[in-house]
Length: 383
Image (cartoon, rainbow, N blue to C red; front, side, top):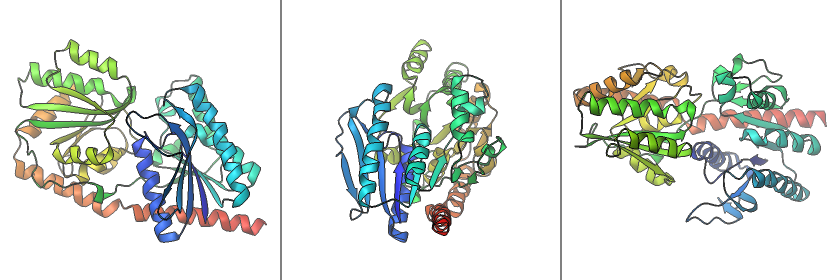
């Protein structure tokens, strides 16, 4: 089976990439699929990537289309879409694809166009619908609603069942994200550091509510007079300067550190060296950083933000606090830092057991290959 995967930014958005990369590995290894990944050619500081990269005995190829451009350059971002279309058609002349699978919302309409022109079944994976979930009726809301619920795809996959509540011309299939346990180092000492290391990982955007964490740290320092801790914020997008200025204004620079462009192996090491994972989100469809922390054997404090509520049982395999409550976050952090390490160890043991038993890449890939086979057999019947 030959599969074309459309992916907006392979070299920078790691969690989507982790999802796609692990699936591709198993599709090639266990199901002998040939996979071409079409993506933008991004300009990454101190990094060089070939325009065509061959992996796994040339069974997986990554095509970085167009010239090297910055991630946030919208003009060249749209130009790269046309480059992807041209390269896709050129490759189709040699061997036609059996499936088109699109993982980036901006590419959903383009994938639909290619599917219609070449009569190839299209699958999309919808990793989030942040704008729909906010419910603020603006231009972006209607655009996201259109590409996610108004365009008819052969199969629409969603990573969380909450998306099923929206009126949709498709019948979405729920297939969870998973975590690759082998990527993470388990350090068998909880609360191991003399200076306790708190960790936040993901985008610095509004829905992640990083300002809630900053206020919580301010409470810990100025009201609760704690000093033996630091918060490492590993960030990827958006309002870095805004939050850095907020930290500076509150005189918290000795306690809160921002880090950018961490390679995957280093990130896994940071997980293992941390003491507590903090998730402050307003909403999370699938907080894969929760599973990564569980796989690294560190306790998780999360807001009650949808998906984490589905897997975290407070004081059994993690900790939950109310949304938008800096005081509650501060109290929970203080409580865990002063709690008996042996009891915390029981909680992280339960979390690791959950990650091992329920979240396997082999399981998700088997579900996806069944989707592919169903679509290709239907197409053959029509022919």
